[in-house]
Image (cartoon, rainbow, N blue to C red):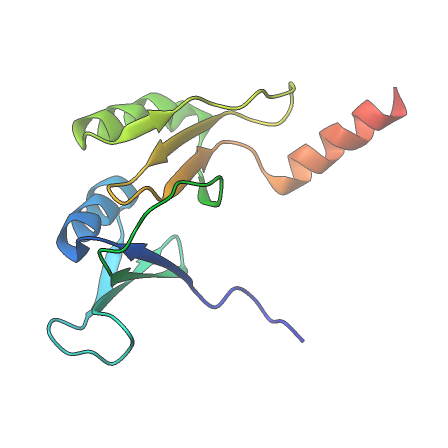
Length: 137
């Protein structure tokens, strides 16, 4: 039986850049840094972000962008503060997708290695309730 998400791993070109981004933007707590040790297939760092284990591994073979992404929940009142942080970190904003009312708002952006992140104001429960209401109309 699946208990929960264990961890999320991102492959990045530069551990230091991404560590700074995670700490400044997400208030991440760094809990491990392999330095020059190689316990896994690449050098790595581990973080805790909102109670979730996030791993980054260093490899310079990063090519494509996709819609695969990690979304963090934020308050609607924090949107402007996060937009300012993203701009200060010189990250590329991605145009938001078309939304229907009731889904919440999102900020999409790429990190330095083309990983897509989303900061989302809604919850799964809110979205499902809204979709049910739409289906009843």
